[in-house]
Length: 468
Image (cartoon, rainbow, N blue to C red; front, top):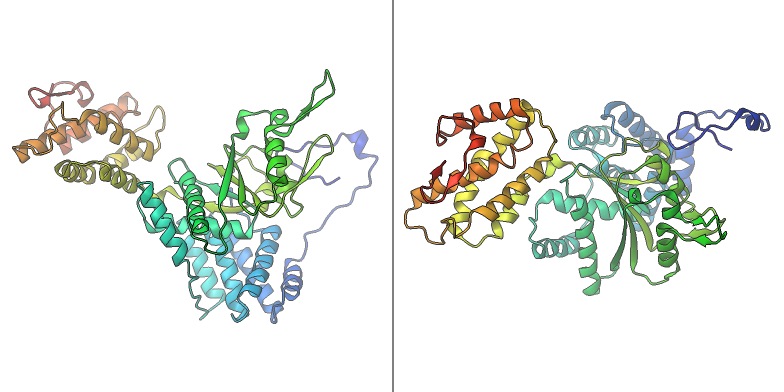
């Protein structure tokens, strides 16, 4: 019986049961020796030097990088990196050992770093491997398919989005359970959907090494443990399968080469995730309470889509590959570009594009720094609400014709509607004191509002084309 005092999701043994077992305390293992032996077994020549470098990387990362719930620079993460390095060693037989280890370090760690920690990590690796230059792996076929997939879904083909899909692909090849971590609006769902679509396209084009994907989404927090994993009916003593055990049984019995992703879209909670530990580690076995064991074949993998890992235990974090989507990298601009490209009126697109550039950035910053929100609205949700309001209100019935006779009046009228929609989307969640601040700030920016009352009291009158 292994005991982890103070762990979430674990219970202490009662004292009368403890007395029946002999306690053994464990010491911290020597990671350098473990790394040395693992690298030697994987076929690296200068294993001792490389083992010291890997150990130094992990200890420096623990000390220098920011403390995030999804970071794990422990022994399990190190062993996973060394095994991955061995796989890369066999794939790229002509590469020098140092380059292979550096490639493995970057592949396993870059995806989970926040945008602030990325330069620090790059600094550590360049100090450990001075003068070693990595040649980028050629993903041109995949990138082409990805761009086609994004354009089909009216998405912007920005570099960070493409990088995140490639990082997810690399992480999925190195670990069978992967977590996509990030705040609302950080393109978590879009990342895996684009990878799925991209792999389907390449499979249809008969490109070797890619399989089509079927996903099985589950919301684990909508079910209790019995409904998720299965339970006995106490009245009849019959076994009733849970949602997860039924999906696992179906996917694991299918021997086709197509990939199957079991997708957990919901918060990670210490109670339900602890039962997944044996599936997420190297055993890859789900043990049910009726003593049945379901083994997971290579074509089945787990994908978690979570906002944070604040309540997950270290055991869970260390078993998964991590891809961190930082909202700062994406921002709201790609969403607006996609929305504007869906409009047909050229004059409207140009006019509204100018309004977005002028007002949205400063307004979002002002609300974030100066105001208290009753309900905190994520930036992207507020911008999406602004776009939806504009789509509903700026119609031909309200005077937005394809060829306006007077362009100056058209721009003025469009600005009024834009300000009205912005007030009721970006500034809608602030409290009373915040509304007064917003009122002052908008009046400083724009002098189009009447002097009486706050800007929240006015609407655009279609007949007079002014605020009333």
